[in-house]
Length: 189
Image (cartoon, rainbow, N blue to C red; front, side, top):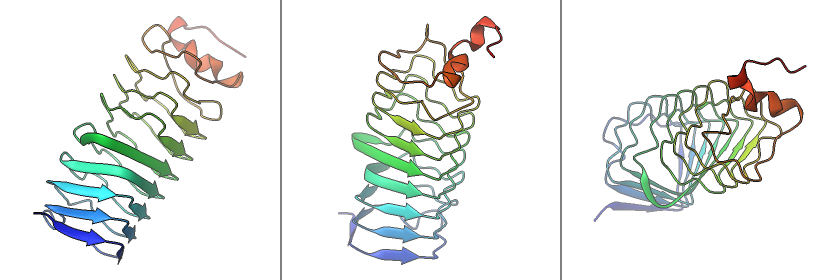
């Protein structure tokens, strides 16, 4: 039986490689914590918030993220694609997620607000109704993704091939349309 933690607050903790393994956290808040050395195994987060935390290069292959919010976190080069897919629900605000991977995940309704998502892998991901609010999507990959009803109106630097990505009723600003025409090597001014 995993170690169960309910309604607790954790501040300024640097976690070791296996320190959070086999634990369940529900309604917990993590402030200024460093998870960058963690190699998560059988960890569950339910209704948790991470504020100003560092996840850079952490291994989260065996993590359940159920209604989890990340605020002002560093999450570079993290592979979310092996997370538990049951009730997978995450939200990001003011985060740096460069080089992270969401390959094949179902992320319906996820929100990314004021995030940097440089070279993020969204290949074959279900991005239905995802909100990309004021996000830098430079070199992010959307091939074979389902981005129906996704909102890209305030985001920028994306290059999405409408022939390789499902975009039915996705929303784009007039200025952002050039990101849909990149493969044609035409200039839009």
